[in-house]
Every structure is written in C-alpha cells, then in structure tokens.
Image (cartoon, rainbow, N blue to C red):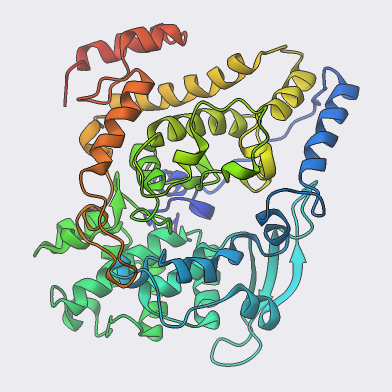
Length: 463
C-alpha cells in the first residue's frame, strides 16, 4: 500500500527504497519461475563445513552469551539493556533512557502466542507471533523478527506494548520501514513541542511526546498520505525543507535516511560505521554492531585490529581498522548469502568456517585473503557508485545532535571532532582520498576495478 502511494519506503518490507521505485513505475510485483537446480561442488565437504558452523551455534556450548537468548527473543533481549545503559534514542534522541520502558520479558509473557523460525534456521525461535487480547487494540496480531518496532516507544515517549505492536502491524501491512516512520514522527513531535509546527499544520493532532493516540494516528496518515502525513511520507529530511523554521536542526538522518536505534554517542564504532555506509544507516552491513569481547576470542583467529581497543566504545583508536574489516567481511558473507542472526559466537570474527563452506559449494579454492578481498571489492564498487551520484566526504556524517549534544542523564558527551579523526583513519586504510572519500586509482586497479576508474577520474579532487 505504501509503495502504491509512493511513500518514502526504506528497509524491512520497504526494501531500501525498492518499493518506492516500484510504486513510481506502477509495478505491482515481479514473478520469477525457474526449472533448473543448484548443484554443490563437493557435497561431503559442504555438509562437514555446515556441521562445524552449526556446532558453533549450539545453545549449550557457545562462548557467546547472547546466542541462547537471541535464539528465543532475538533483539528484544536488548530493550532493558539499552535503557539501563542510556542507549535509547528517547524523545527524538534528546535522552538516552526512560524512567520505565518496555521489556522483552513482558512481551513474551503477555503478547507472544508462539515462536517462529526460518527455513533451515539453526535457532529454535528467531521470530515470534504476537496477539493483543484486550484493550483498545484487542485483536491485532502479527509476527516479527526484530526489535525495531519496540524502539519506537522510546522515540515518541510511549511505554505501551499494545501501542508499539499496533505500530508494527500498521507498518508491516503497508510495507513501510519502521525506522523511517518512528523517526519522522519523533522529529515532528519535537518540532511541535518547540512551536515550529502546530495543530493547524498537523490537522488538529496534538503531536506531543507521550501521546499514544497521536503516534498511531500519524502513522496511519503517513500510510494514506493524508494531510500532514503526506509531508512526513516524503521522509523527514524533505519534510524539513518544506517546513523550514530551523526544523532541520532536529533531524536524525544520514544521507537522507532516518537513522536506526544504534547508540552513536556511546559507541564510536557505530557512529563511524553508520556515517560511511553507502546506502545510509544500515547496521546489518557490519553486524554485529558491537565489537567482540576480547577475552572470549581464541588466539588463533587472525583479525587486523586490536580487540581490546576496539572493545572500548568511547576510544577512537583502531575504530577505522575495525569498521573496515567489518564492512569487508560482511559484504562477502551477505553475498553467500547468510542471515545476520547467525553471525554469532566466533562466526563474527573467524571467517575460516565460512570460507570452507564457500569453497566446498563452489569449488573456488579461495584463500582467506582472497575471500575477504571479495568483500573489499564490493565495498569499493558501492562507494564508486555513490561517488558517481554526487556523494562525498561531507555526506559521511551523523546527525548534528550526535556531534554537538550530550546525553545528560548518563553523562555521555557528544562525539564532536572525534568522527573526523576516525574518518581520516578509515579513508587512509581504505586507500581513498581523505578530502573527498573517492577511491584512489591504485586501489581500484589493485581490486580489478579498472573499468570503474574511467567514471571517477574526472571527479578526482571534487568535494
């Protein structure tokens, strides 16, 4: 429905903007039918490699404390942790925590009707089906695999499972990205409370933080592109251009897209990784978004960063090296493809099990360095594409609030100039021009991307 209305859809069912493009072209669906099959080069070795990976995800023997809880609750296990640590984007990221917030335990005990899992998933319940059985939202039901919809409660100051579940159902049925909607509404709520917009603008809706009815009503208006919902459906960045009056100061966007629920001011690697993401904020491009516990890493795993420095969230040291390695390795893993949920235990840092699986399937006989180089080639090709479309270093940034404003209740200062220092390091490690963030000729040729340079050489030195 959102696609048909050409709402600015990104992520989740919105699909990184694909739905918007389909709606613009009046394209309802694409049907594909195949008659062939896919053969595995070495079935015996492939099965052996798969079993080694599955053993690492064993709930009883894993060294990753998150694996068992993730297997049943997914990212919902993080709700209470985020609130305690002050990592929420509460009230449009003005605060890091709420006095009382949703918990995964309440969700499981009151609203989950049964667990779900994906086809061939090694986890028993990476998803859940839910139902609200009483109250004004009684009868709504659906399913989920992620915690994003629940984070919306903190964004808009609403502490209600039925409300965020209603929000989830609305977005899912309409094909909308939950992050786009929740941050567009929380931005509008801050603008409303600061007097930038009023009830005349919102069609009579008292768009204040904590107003549950206003939150749901505005979600419905975005879906139908009705009234002020039509403005927010364009994305908050375009909405700020329409409204003006300094409203852009409160935006939470990167490269035109609303951010996710990641704590940028508390974890510098998150700020850096989100800023350099070619398609806007997307933590699945470098998942998990938190560095591994160095004490849990086997000594024989080759990693190009210092795990102890990388584990320190507010230390800029080695963040460039960590983020580059995460992007390169995840690019090749996503190309296999795999699910980000199974990049747990040592599977997030040790690429050898994945390499064995790839070689057994394709017969490619890649070395570990060649395997990771595939990911580096993907990242550089993506960067070259956005450079061609006009993006430069100035676009590799995070929202103004993260750079300039502290989180007072947990004494977390803003990122400040630390982001520029990390960007310098990241671009240097990448072999990109530090001033423009354009890949250098020698790097592209090293990766076998000579043909790309012809498109970029005229842009060399552009800013």
